Length: 192
Image 1 (cartoon, rainbow, N blue to C red):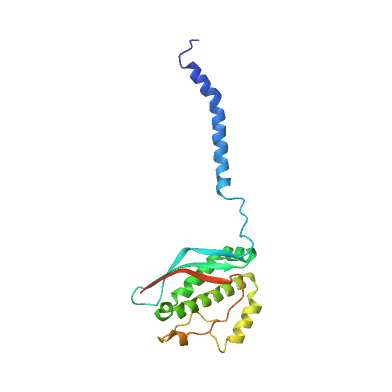
Image 2: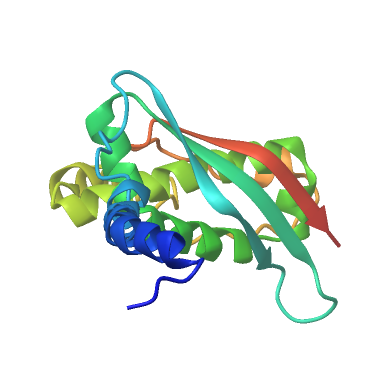
């Protein structure tokens, strides 16, 4: 058998090719495990700030001229258990926030008092929803709504205020203690 001038190169390729394929195969199989973040530990102990991403963009104010709110929000929780609860139920929280924001009027979103009312109302509604999902809402929220039902419409959907004096027209919101300890408007843009 005649040896050509490329025979040593062919032998080298035959010897090293299987080991290179093995390394490439192992790397390919290991990548999904590394990318999935299999070692995720959850929320840190202590206070956690959970951003609601992507920002919420909702139409508000009913029919007529297109108006929208773009809100970048964060939820604060006091411990890792509450942070994990909030993170797990973010789709529910987003749904509540979209419903609340889309039911607002120009009077509420235009004033500082209205935005503060909106923040406290949304926080109370988020906590009611989280407690209800956990099966804890029956005692606390029913007691809260029955005690305040005659004076405060906090259990109703976002109230519609028709006067321009928002400071006197806004109802009082009864706070609800739950996994979300505070709600922050990182950025709140209103286009009229």
